[in-house]
Length: 93
Length: 291
Image (cartoon, rainbow over all chains, first blue to last red):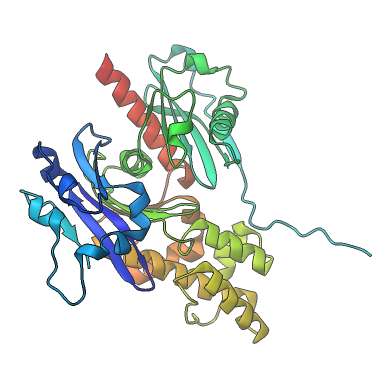
């Protein structure tokens, strides 16, 4: 399943897409600890798979929560993507 | 000084129903699904996988009470009590506050599960336009979610936005769709970014001499555009179905279909009960898994 967390507003589209089929295969889930803003959480989904998702409190402000990893003037440093061994995390912006 | 009582045009009709041809006493498995949404709550009761009864009403300020009211109204005149239900699944915003539920399941998974039951096995994309959010869900032939996206950041493109316009224009919510089609030429849509801005724009258009129908057409078109951008974000796989209260609004549905160039499958049941139907189907699968 591709779970899209985020929103679209007047300033653009801000979604983090997580491929839960890939995510469920990974036991360590190092992305959760790697995220400096701690926006990711491990939970059991409706199909009883242990996967990651974006914490409820960050979903409507994800542009700002992820802001520190996305400087405008420097090269992006997406810790979550680097830590994910299966390429299950995609950012839309 | 005389004061006039303003009509509440946003109030949609609540309903309950049960199938008199089904004798629940003979049923092997009785399951229930309760969908406590932000605006409306539904309860669905199934006997051996067949739809037996449902209710559809407004959500109050208290989720446990709303869930109880919905299930009690669905069971009204059937002789059923809560003790007769073998398994209940709660879903929707208030899913963790359904006191008699055995388990909570997200509304995303429930809508996907109900697609086949409500519209047939060819459903692959579900557009659910709820009271305060809209979602696009892709599912497989078994009703399992393969992808989803949700817009719950603002009221634009949701049922609440339509209620605001019904009140503004003094048009009963049930007539909004048909009256929005009563225009000679489709006007430019109003703002699709924000309901407050759209309402301000609509007031200006009314003052400029636009008819109510034309303003409604501009809003319906804007709403269709808003949900379309959500649909385009994850793509559309045939067949498409539209659920939620807005699926009853022909003005929105026909504009979405026109813009997409495809026709959505027509529902066999009340489109607002889709989440609760999915929850009742989940309940059946879970009880069978446990046994």
